Length: 314
Image (cartoon, rainbow, N blue to C red):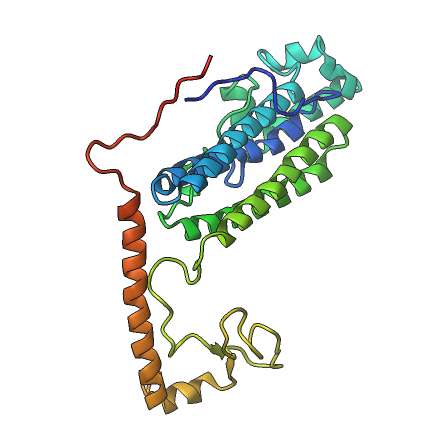
C-alpha cells in the first residue's frame, strides 16, 4: 500500500527558468540511469526476495519507494525550470520570469531554440512538463531494468546502477550554475552513494554469495589470464599473485595460441585436476540442495498469504 505525502523528501528549489537544463535533467526522470529505472528495478527485484529473504524484501521496497520520491523531486525541478515556457511558448515567454535570463528578442529566440533543438518533443508534446523520456526524446523502456531472480546477482546489478546514477548527477552539476538546483542534485547524488552502501552490506550478509547462483566455477578455467594483445605485457593484481578471495594464484598465459595447441583446446588435464573436478561436482550438489531448501522452507503451507495484518493497540 502506497501513501503519497505531498511534501517532497528534499525541498527542491529553482532560482530562475532554464529550459535547456530542464531537458538535460530528463536523463534522471525517464533515462536509462534515472530514478524511475531505479525504482522499478528494486520494486521488481523485491518480489523474488520476499520468501527466502524477507529482510531484503523490506530493504528493496524501502529503497524503491525512496527512488519514487526522488523521481518526484526531479519532476518538480524540471517543471520549475520550465516556468514561463508552458502553453504558447513564445507568447508566454514574453510575459513571464523567463525574461530574467534573456536580453531582448534574439536572446529569447536562442534560449527557446536551445531547449527545442536536441529534443523537440519535450515542449511540443508535453506542453512543457516532464515526460518519460531521456534528454534526446527516447521513451523510457523496461529493458533498462535488471532483475534476474537471484538476489546476489540483483544486488550486484544495483551496485552498478547506483554507481551510474551517481556519476550522471555529478556530470549534470557541471551544466548548471543555479545554487538551488545544484543543492538538489547534490542531495540526489549523495543518496545514490548511501544506497550503494546499503546494497553492499546486504550482499555481504548473504553467505556464500560467490560465485552467483548455484553452480561453482569450473576449476580448469578459473585461474587463467590470457594475454590477448601484442606489445608490452602489463601485470597487476588482476593477472599475477593471489586471486582475490579465492585462495589460489593467477596463471598468466603469455602465449595463448601455443597454450591452446599444447592443451588440445584446453581439454588435456592432469590427475590433480580430476580430483578438483570431483570436488566441484560435490559442491554443486550441496549448493543445489541448500538453495532449494532455502526457498522451500520459506514458502508457507496451505493457503499462501503475502501480508500479515496486525491491528494497532489503542
